[in-house]
Length: 511
Image 1 (cartoon, rainbow, N blue to C red):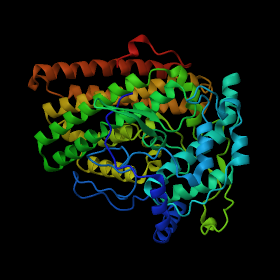
Image 2: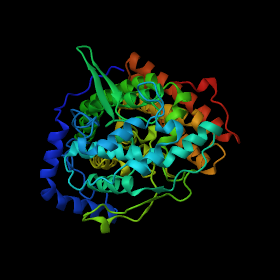
Image 3: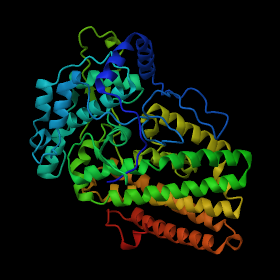
Image 4: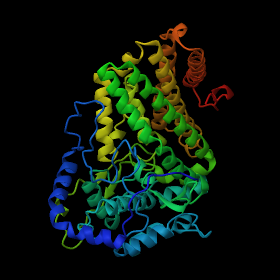
């Protein structure tokens, strides 16, 4: 997949590691504070949002995951593709891990030998001296990959043999758990794989040319084409989040200043960026059959049949570790990776106040998933949610025919995005075996109702628009968006009434 991505300064791994070691003394105090915050449950969002709606400052400007008008949700630097030589065995096991390796041979996960090799060969690395942001982000990504692969390897083997999952491993060994917890505490993140590390910090350039940059995943579970498309597709979609961030801040600024022209222009830009995102993802996420070949490894440890009561993280310290006594309790439950965990979904939900539609806990933000994102993502989404609520973006948009039409156009793209997520979730081969699970049925019903609520909001917004005040092209676009929303509303209502899951009706393919 060709993708133009922001250029970033690339440093050698040896230089990064040396710089990280020099920062040990000054970074230790910050690390202790991060651990204390992690243990107490603080999420790093204690400071109130900026009083200026259209001004945003990252709370951790040195992190690889910042949110800016120039890069959106993409990382600050190029992701580190190869670890420093100190972590040679870790790098080797990650290279040997995928079911299908790049050279055409089978890796450790194919035969179920990965866990055994981890237990026998992976050292308990001392990561206390690592403070460089790029190395920390890379180690967080890589240890999170190791954790998911180790825990869920038996489930993947069972799924390939009998199309059911059985039980995952319940104990994460110290040679994964201990460094992962230390790094996660330093980054104020969950010690488990999450969306940004699986996608946005998991690409490398393979060809730089005048026409574009070809990117490939750094780490994989399956190695299949669908996994590659999933990862690179989400990275390519994130290219447009700079426009979304710009538009969201300008939209809030327009509402705060009662500047209708500024508000409308920003709404148009946001809808345009969402249209680009939808176009990229519709092309990238097409093969749901192959999706099953890696989806097992994206499962969380929370409310999953493979994990009865979470995971125990062994916390045996390495020699000389000075923070071992401060580790959290060993029982852990975490969300996994899903398309709904893409920050694009939460940004739209908060900006347009969509969480109000489904107070019973609709995804993608009311289930607590926002608190598992990188710290700057969490703070930015909090900023957007606070100012959108204070300035009543939804009601402000509906007070003008032109603004209302722009709002309908933006909601149309949000509905397309959320509907595609829902359809992939419902009809993925991977999830057919979970249909009998009451927890999964409830999870799917909540999402179904939320997306139907968005469709109904599109219809109400269009009904509230004085169509006679619109230009012909804008009137036609508003009517087309309402027509698509009505198809979704009727189809989802029928599905919610069915006692048994049914195939999607042909009329449902509105987007």
